[in-house]
Length: 111
Length: 126
Image (cartoon, rainbow over all chains, first blue to last red; front, side, top):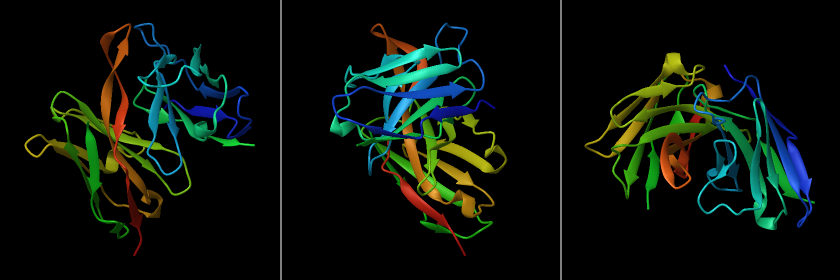
């Protein structure tokens, strides 16, 4: 089974400043088609999760361009270039190469 | 707009079967993948499994021995059954529809959770 490990688990942020979340998989998420099988979701307070990024780096429709997914192999990063107050929530990475597995989640909160 | 609504008992006794249904409105259940995800109180997300409209399934290895996911195209709904539940199965259960990913304006065969229900809390307790 592929294990997903996120860090940090808690991330206090200042509006206007950048923020980054790391996600590491126990094996490479590179698919034979050349894409990395990794998604990022955010769960805002009191809401179900929603998609941010799929295939490692492609923003889903309607997602602001301040959200950037990057990485390769086993190491991936979600970067928020300038945090806004509405970005508070818990961020999850999820591998989709072998069935699906979520990371533990990273709680982003305003300082 | 696709809407999903989970339904089922909010309380299940230990060792009994947890049964949930997801009713889909605003879209046909055909030609899509449909999934279940759960979240224990105060904890993170756990993938349960999915069903394709033709009945093909994928189950989380940790739940596979106790899990059945099925689809009823005539009712535009899909369901899950989890046997022999324990307190560890207490969670909010979400149903979701997969959405095909688009790369460079072209729809691909990669799917992500695009639409989610609001979730339903199921407590396992005697």
